[in-house]
Amino acid sequence: EAEVAQSPRYKITEKSQAVAFWCDPISGHATLYWYRQILGQGPELLVQFQDESVVDDSQLPKDRFSAERLKGVDSTLKIQPAELGDSAMYLCASSLGGAYNEQFFGPGTRLTVL
Amino acid sequence: DQQVKQNSPSLSVQEGRISILNCDYTNSMFDYFLWYKKYPAEGPTFLISISSIKDKNEDGRFTVFLNKSAKHLSLHIVPSQPGDSAVYFCAATTSNYQLIWGAGTKLIIKP
Image (cartoon, rainbow over all chains, first blue to last red; front, side):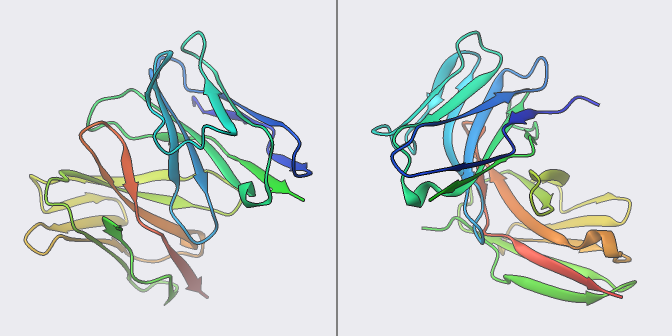
């Protein structure tokens, strides 16, 4: 069964360091999402791609976060410099797109900033 | 401004009984709703969905009910099993194919 791949699964870093997360969506899924989830809350959308284009990054803290999907397939989310408040689960999801297509999630990356 | 609300942070149910998880929304323009299940250290997994043209959708032990006039939906799990212990999220689809999520309800199935 096709799955969304994410790496690493866990990342521990010190504040002010740079971190990067990778996501490989399900083959053929044009829409890719990056979310941040804090315990006790629902996922918060950071950025949405349609193929290689950013559709919505209004909630992405652009002073320290960046995201790219250069060839419209896999994607990277970067944080530089990391801050203590960035500790969270970072989830990637992909979808065929359209109004009634569910999003499929990867296992997530648990980031801890010390 | 929470557009999708799950007011019960947790719910404890006896194995074999019915679990009912509730969700309220404020935006009458939402027309498609989804339930996801999440285990610790894993990503959410799609469970069941419902379109606003329906008031009920069933898939095995899972049934979702939609009451548009009350802007309320509920997920019923019958019978509840130990493997159902997880966090359940309600989400609504927006016009630009994004999901608006509730805060989740942690379901605990007691033996």
